Every structure is written in C-alpha cells, then in structure tokens.
Amino acid sequence: MPVSDFEAVIGLEVHCQLRTKSKAFCACPVVFGAPPNTAVCPVCLGYPGVLPVANREMVSLAMRVALATGCTIEETSVFARKNYFYPDLPKGYQISQYDRPLATHGTLAVRANGSVKNVRLNRIHLEEDAGKSMHEFSWEDVPTGSSLVDLNRSGTPLIEIVTEPDLSSADEAHETLVQLRRLVRWVDASDGNMEEGSLRCDANVSVRPKGAAALGTKVEIKNLNSFAHVKKAIEHEIERQVASLEAGTALRQETRLFEPATGSTKTMRSKEEAMDYRYFPDPDLGVLVVDGAWKRDVAAAMPELPEARAGRLQAAYGLPAADAELVCLSRPLADFYEAAVASHPKNPKAIANWVLSELLARMSDADRHAGRLPVAPEALAALVARIDDGSISGKMAKELLADLIATGRSVDDLVKEKGLVQISDEGPIRDAVERVVRDHPEQVATYRGGKAATFGWFVGQVMKALQGKGNPGVVNRLLRDALDKD
Image (cartoon, rainbow, N blue to C red; front, top):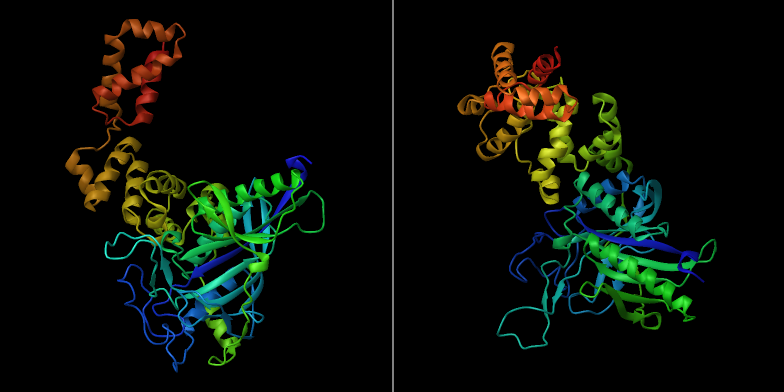
C-alpha cells in the first residue's frame, strides 16, 4: 500500500510549568539555575510526616489557561498519587490528578497547511514536577557512568494539557504547540521557555489506512523539548510506522525517545513493560473546590485573548488580517503597538509596518514575549510622526532608529544634532533638479529616447546634490516635470 494511502493520527500531552513564586505544595521558591538541591525543604524532598498544602495561585493560573481554551472548570477535582520509583521522585509518587481533573473539554484553533482546525482538548489537570536526573557533566570528582539528581525542580507546579487525537501531520502538531505556548504566555500562566524545561511535550502517534475508522497502534514519543524536535520526531515516527506496515511488520504499542543526533526515535519501553501507576486519591489533600466566586475573580482578571484582539485591531485601525495577527504574536508586542498608536493616532498602519519590520528584526522570541522591546512606544510614534510631517524621510528614520535604541534620546534631539531635517521646500529642490538635468544632456536624451529606467539614476543624482535630505516625493515630482517637458 503506497505511503499516500495512509494517514497519521496524533495527540499531544503538553506539560507546562506555572508561573508561581513558590512550589505546588510547599513554600520553596520556584527558581531556574540555582545551585543543585538548594531550593528544597522536607515537603518537596518527601520526608516522613510532612503535609502538603495546595498553592492557590497554582490553581488560579491553571484556571486562566482553562478559560482561554474554553474548558469547563470543574467545581470539584481531586489530587491523586501517581506511584512509581525513579531517583528524581523523592516521595516515590507524584501528586497529580487522574479521573477527576480540574478542567475538561476545551478547544484550540490551529492554523496549518492553509486551513484552520479546532483541536479538541480532553483535559487540563494539575500536578507537580519531578526533579532532574543528570547523566552528563564535567565534574572531575564524579566517577564515569554515574548519574546525579537535582531536586530543585521537584514540586514545581505544572498543568498537563491533553489534546484529543485530532491532529494529522507534524505541521499541525508543531503549530498546536506554538499556539499553546503563545496562549499560556498571553494569560501570564507560564513563561513557556522550552530551553529551561518550562514547556515539554509528549506525542502519541499512529497511522491507519485513509478513511479507516479504527485507530492504528499508538506509539508515545516522550520528552520532546523543542519545537524542532516535536516536528522532526513525529515526521520520523510516521515514516517508520508506514514503512513497517508496508513491509508487513506488525507495529507494537510502545514508548519511544527521540534522538536529535540521528533524527530518529528509539524504543524506551514496550506496552508489556508499561508501569501500573496505582492511582488513588491523595489522603493528605482534600477535594479541590472551585466555587463560582473564585471563577468570576479569575475571569475578571483575564486579558483580551489574541484572536479577539487581532480582530479588534483590524476593525479599529484598518490593519490587514495578517498584520493584526503578527502584532498579536505576544501580548507585550500588542500592548506596545497600541501605546504607539495612542501617541500618534494619525497613521496606525505605518506604525504597524515599523513594528513588524524594523522592531521584530531586532528582537528574539524571548524578548518579544518578555516585553523587552528595543525602544519606547512613544519614541517609535515620534519617528513615524516626523516622517508623516515631512521632517525626515523613511531612510533617515531607519538611520535614526539605531541611535534611538542605543541612547534612548528623543527623536527631535537626534534630528537636530545630526542635521537630518528633510528638505521639502521646492526652491532648493528645483535648483538641484535643474542643475542635474542641465549637466547631463546625454542621460536626458537617453531617458527621452524611451529608457525610463534612467529615471532612478537622476533621482540618485538629485538626492546626492541635496546630501540625501530631499523629500523623495517632491524630488520625484519636480524631476519628472523637468524630464518630461518638451
């Protein structure tokens, strides 16, 4: 059966660290990069006799994500113990939620391959993170082949977002993860930094003949910690499964790991080796009750969501849909744009062009989402205003932008200091045009003989005569009048 006769069925399980100051069930700080095993206490180390207390802010942040994805927030949910043994799990179990999660049945609109798909969310549940096992390090006093454990991360609050198997390609899975990260950042629930482990993903992948109703044999790919790895791992797994079926080899349900060096997946454990987690309600934590007042408080603090905001920017400022969507790549970027427009409301489209071209090129993804923009919105607005009133040209403005970023000084001060005021007076521009036309009769004859492309050369000569300060619109108009007259 050809590859084109198969289709992939994919679901994601996304683990997202919540942006709390303290851990899920104790007062230890949530930190990244601290010395190993320094942000710990008897509770997150699992000492006998200690009692966990649920972090209220953890629940509120999880509710933000649930509201943003249209989930039903359950009035009562239950913390459960997920039992397994691993060196980075000091209690011998993980506090999670199982059959009674915090939120269920949401959706996420995902754009991929030229269309929009509403991906269903099965659930969003709360849990604590495990510690971190380290197998590679440069310390000379640690024997080769040893592993070390850092428990600073143990107890960090997480949500797990579980999609239904609604995805059919690696591109859709990649875009789903991108949209989820934008959303958790947008509502201030998480920093979403995959490099620091704040966002991690498992993918469930199967293939089946096109049109078949029954699902194929599911394979889980664990611990995908970058967008590129998610896409590459799923692409490889689809190819591997199709190749196996074409060769007549039965697939087995298993858990696999992605190897970035080879771009392939390898077996971690088979279904027969899958662990029985023996879930049961945590006796130290009561039922989690989310009443109507708590829901209303969280809802009242929610920001305008990205799709709604992009629609409003289109309607209010006449932005094209694509531009409005790009402005809403992050909430700080959208806030910056609207603050700039408030400072210079006459030209919102030009401000959007500057934001999406000059500013985005100077920002990393982390800068954009953390709100580390290179200039103040009022400074960008002033730059566009000076272009609009003819004081400077667009080219001059681009030169000024670097100085604005470096110095933080005002646009007007820099324009005066650098002598960059644009010449819009027709008198000196007409004088320059007449000199250029008079001094270059051969080029004039070439232009009038039908070589229209020569016009650009004349513009360059006039601008050179004006030291680059001529108003381009006035230069073009007067030059064309001079060249086109009999």
